[in-house]
Length: 206
Length: 159
Image (tube, rainbow over all chains, first blue to last red; front, top):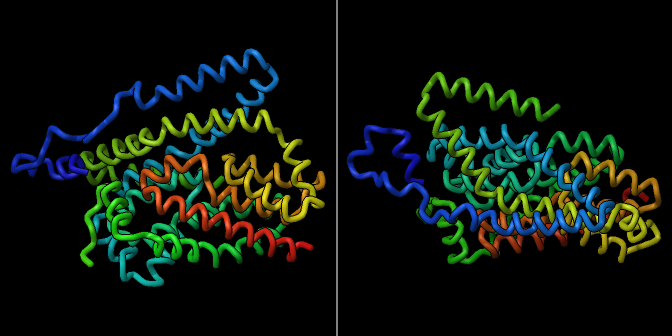
């Protein structure tokens, strides 16, 4: 993102940064949230007509909303700090192409140390891609985040039993790299280019 | 509990960052907000849709479909339900445990939990913003097949 560079070294802004283009094609508020407000109106109407369903729907929605509000702030703050303080060379060295098993392990531990729903992992993954992590490692990170999060494992053992948790964990240790590998291999050059473009990342020299 | 550790990390990180460089800290916070706000519209819609879906098909209905006698069809149904639902872990595990007590099978619950965590049909619009459509579909498809395999193995392990 170009505004990051101007922010990071403000004195460099004069020699040719493009100060006037922070967000390339930002849609208007109404365009982005319009569908949500329509849905909300429909939901409220339905809730008034069928109060019992409406009440349950409200409490379900609030459950997810509460989780979002309680878990997401530190995740996104850490994401911001990561983006600003960890430079591309470091990220590439530890999790980029050629970082080998160690890189995969770092990605796995990063994902497992997370808390919070999977949808919060994608913006995080975006920063990793931008900073030069290999796609394979980013996908391992996603896999670990989705299903081997340490706090959730404890919770799983408590509610489903330790055998259930351990057996599933064992299978996931095989499944996560497998899924990452298959996904990585399924991508052609066009799709890989698309991913780099989506995340404002430089293409690694092949 | 773990959330508090994350909060601690974020606060310490912010403090260190602030003392080292206020400009960068400000940039980090702006980035944090932008990354969040970028997925917010989809997220709000997903919450609403899922809230209603789970209100219309409550756990009692799910229970009937996923009993331990439901066999492989039950596994497929559980995988389908897990794939299209989104619920916080603190809701999902107690629900699975309750379903188990009221007659759902381990195989079906493994399919449900595994897909719930790994496969996200409703979050595809968010995922593809980072990974593009092809990688998103491949990852979710592979995770779905893997979850079904996990369920079968778990059915054997827990038998």
